Each structure stands twice: as C-alpha cells, then as structure tokens.
Length: 240
Image (tube, rainbow, N blue to C red; front, side):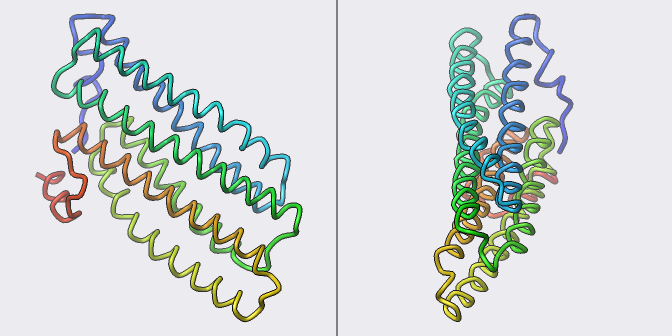
C-alpha cells in the first residue's frame, strides 16, 4: 500500500503541529541521505585505495552521531507537546527507532573506511573486490529504496527491500566462502584478505539495517508491528 503524505503531514488544524511532523520527516531523510553518502564514499575509498577519502568518512561519523541525538530530541519534544495519536504517533515512534539503524549504518561505513585506510597503506588485497562491488551496489540500492519507501509511505516498496535481504545474505556467504578458500591456498595474503572480509560483513549488516527501516515503514503505513513476522504473512498484510 502507498499512502498520500497528506494523511500524515498537513492534515491538522494546528499549523505548528504540521510543521513539526514535516520537519521530523525532513531531518530523518537528511540523515538518511548523509549516511548513504558516507557508505558510498567508504566503498569508493576502498576501491580506489584513497586514504584521504577514507579519513573523511571516519571524521564525518561524528556528524551522523550528532544528527541521531538531535532527531531523537525532536521526536521527544513532539510527543511531549503535541501528544500525537494514530498514524502520527506511529511516525514519531518509527523515526526514533529508524535513526538508530541509520546511525549503525554510519558505523558500518566507518568500519569500511578503516579497512580502506589499512589497505591503502598495506596494498590492495589480491581478491574480494568484485564481490565487494557487487554486494555494495545491492545494499546501497536497498538503503535507497528503504528511504524512498519512508518518503512515499510505500509499504510495497518496503516489502521488496525486506525480500532482498535474504539474497544479500546468500551473496555474503558465497563471497566469504570464496575468500576463505583463497586464504587457505595462499596464506601470505591473510591479513589483507581479512580486511576485505570485514568489509563484506559490514555490508551484510547494512542490508540488515535497511530491512529494519523497511519494517518500521510498514508499521507506519499499515499500523502493525511486523518484526519477527514471516515475509509471507507480511505480504498478505501489505497486499490486503
């Protein structure tokens, strides 16, 4: 289901309440797009062996942390002042949970940047970059779609993101098996290959966080908490 944003924003007699909700929405998306850019830059730093870019990602993580605290405070103020109900309350609660996932995506980007920095100093690993590029493209698309699902209140798009998470998990397992086999055959490159393994793990976790955000979007739109619910049951809910 896709809902009109007017069902959440702009539908109140209080102009200030409308502005509060619209601001919360905008600030969440601002943080989301910044985190997405952090992840994109961390991957680029790894691929290009760019230590300077990797350092930028690590330093910008403090901004992401600050945004999380500011949005949490903004959500608490809305609850205290406006006492939201129904879909408005679901929006505020969901945002408070989703910013935690965004902050953790920022942490994963920082981890990738650290690995990129180490590899820029040691020299690139002999294997794993094709897999990193493939999985990173996949999880970046998931993250983008999760943010779009929030912006458009689109539970069908959110459900598609959830379905992609299982595919990413399978890709991650295949990539790590391939790298482990290579390391057993040539132990001289274990240190550098392990750095790539940590990058793959970080990307797999980004997929998990995109999935979590999508679950909260469905909660906002459909009014039901579908965490720990089989995807097949969620399909019935979204498609009803």
